[in-house]
Picture (cartoon, rainbow, N blue to C red):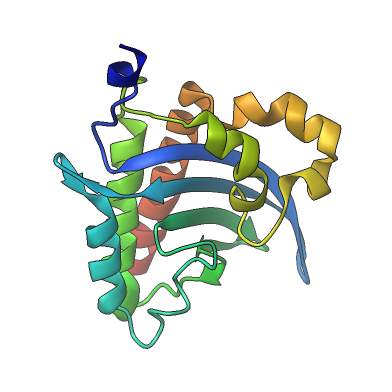
Length: 184
């Protein structure tokens, strides 16, 4: 019976959020990171949609694929020295006409996550126990940033559904502001 309650009604699962400090040549920046695993199911083709958007990107398709697998997506928003940046799987996304399809996709995706119910946000315990440390932040171990003990104590909070929804809304607002500035 428990298996029925864990059915995902979306092709997005294991959504986590970590906020962390990033060093840059212009100073310290706080990054809002959303990490997730995309798949296709009967209610959505989230993985196919992402891969199709990648095909529209100018010569960057391979740069935007996560080294952990094509179904893993790490999104990061940060502001440094007055400049706003979005990173997709560690790749800084330019704000230009060629990359607008990706910005539109990310806005739609973050809005979808912000509106998900608790039941739709499936987090697998095996993922949390064995993969999250290396996947939550692109090419970084969370435990190396905050220490193994702190990571284990904080692990459940990274997948807190309320926190994830708030982070997705913040990410969406960030993208909307970038797009508004671009079109102004």
